[in-house]
Length: 579
Image (tube, rainbow, N blue to C red):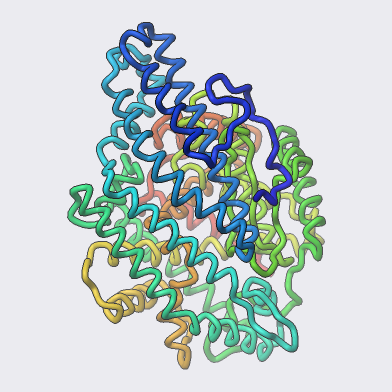
């Protein structure tokens, strides 16, 4: 099955509990290991605190091995969505291993919580593990296991559909990602032609996307009901372990973005329109340089992006540079766009090997370079926490994981002269900061849309579209969509998080505020800011979210009080970078 060059990498630490040779896709070989763990946790077999702590480590070792097998199959599937054998192997795990594993993991969680030695565990060390395990037991319902399996299968179908989309453009077949290059071209007619072709191709699949989402919606609403929640909104906040903020906090964040960011975005759009000499700003005018300079092209070949990124990390920090070099050497990268590859970009952690893998769809854009830095930040997080022995602590809440990645975008931008002449480097920095001002409203749109969807059970497709369009009016700025109302109404179909990871999007906004704070700190004391950043990453998920932010030198706070000064900082820097 494996098409991965790193598939045979050994575990980070020699196995203590899991056999060295085992087929982790064969439930008949996994089940006895769960049996052994259950038997080993009895009061007679596990009588001392060191024995109980070793049992926790053995449990984590098995979980990490299964987690890594799942990750490898997912990675391979996203790299080769058009390979039937790869798809079969991935779906086998989803359909036959995950459903068997979940009830056994639940049983082990129950055993952990009921064990007489649990009360003797050092509180500071185990409080996060204890809290998260209690949450797992609270929410687990055996009747939800087949629903979650079906949910994963529907998500895979969405990825397969989107990954298969191509258009014929001027005699050549192009993926939709590859078409993004043309939206940066000074020739407006060319931009419009490319944009319309992609928009039309997406609209051809609009019904399939809507049907796929409606099937997902029904499953999620049933999952929430089974767990005793009035709607999926309240269930999702609990299931995502959002101990430190509420739906109301998110709505206040939306308001803060509306009051503090939207005036800046509208001003930037007005400036863009004036510089381009246009009567109105159209959807195909948003990526081109406003002075009609040729597009930023940081690299032509992916290999040049890799070598240039290595130079950035060499200048930034020796430890980070070494980590990236290790990824290159072990072939833990699949970066080039191609037909049959799933959309988007991600970093996946190989939980037992304790190494990161980066997936993306690079075609030579400045945005690709930003994605490279972003995913490298995630990878550095994985590497920073790899010596943590508790499996559960080698990953952190998403809100902090994205601080790792978004901070790296800002910190790495200092060295863009690796790819550009100085004037172009400043242009790229300005493009990135303008992108931050644009992404905040998009985050608010996507998050508020999901709040609406999951708090309005039984809504119709027309009602859902109306809710989306109202949010586009609120957060879309001054872009003129006349003549393309259908494309605007279905724009959310491109956001894979809505399909694959419900409610996972506001984290980007919360984390962006953290990253901007790390960046602000670096302007005052670069060495301390970088040291604090790495200290935060090294904690993995061993501390509550506010403490992780504090360790990295920033506050976990996303009201208007925090948003306003950070937006002002971005405005100041944009003014310095004005052409």
